[in-house]
Image 1 (cartoon, rainbow, N blue to C red):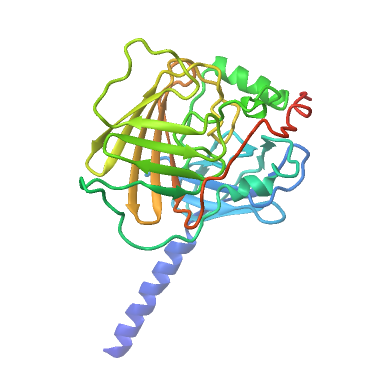
Image 2 (tube, rainbow, N blue to C red; image 1 turned 30 degrees about the horizontal axis):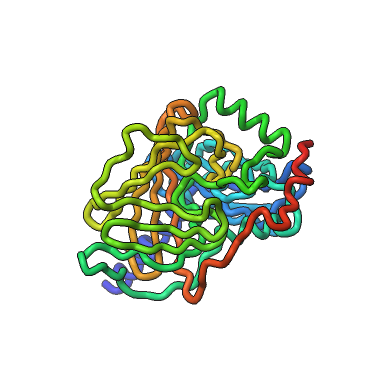
Length: 338
């Protein structure tokens, strides 16, 4: 009897091992516009059927591998600021390895202070305290605190219209010489700045986000039940109102001008129109993290709305520092195109 039981256990483990071995894979090498290997590129493979995501980071030689993938179609992307790469779809067969060579283009000049290491660091995780999310006297989650810049968890799959694609191609070809950030103009349309820390100050009727490295340096979300102004004057950062959906704060932002670039996206050169409309869902699942799910709706730029998910780590012991963009700004002398 023991021998039969032992044999059955061996067969079971052999079957499990075989099932694991039959998982598919995607491998390749990440290179830049000059053909050199790119190390530390944070990559994502998303199962287009289930939505499950898998992570990988390129090695010093630029090599990467997504392993033990269930058979299916995967969207491979690099949701990392500083590296431009258009997502590609790869079919994975059971027990087989698909090959995808990835060629990226630097979104900056890869110079000191804005090199790949700096951009990779924006997606780094930080040690955070454990515990439940704090609550306000009104019983709502309290988002107050200083937070590290949001890192992209899921970049979504934006489908850009031909007109917008042509603008992006032109901006990429001239090294984004007209990027607003280089002239100390607003960088992000989302609520949280992509660079530096963000401090949240929450009251029952108003939530204010103080941004360390963006212009004008703040966002205000009205929670007092007001509506958007009927005759809205388009602005760089729009007008935001928020309502509670259980423990989730849903923020509606509209009233943008078309002067800013969507600098909060990995490509950093995506345009938008004045009909851009953002819906942001904010959650604090625990003491140390703040989740943001932003849906971009702009029929003048995208074929359909799409959603980007980010997470911020609590920045214990940090404060928002003074940041004067136009003081010693050396970008303008270098933003001269190819």
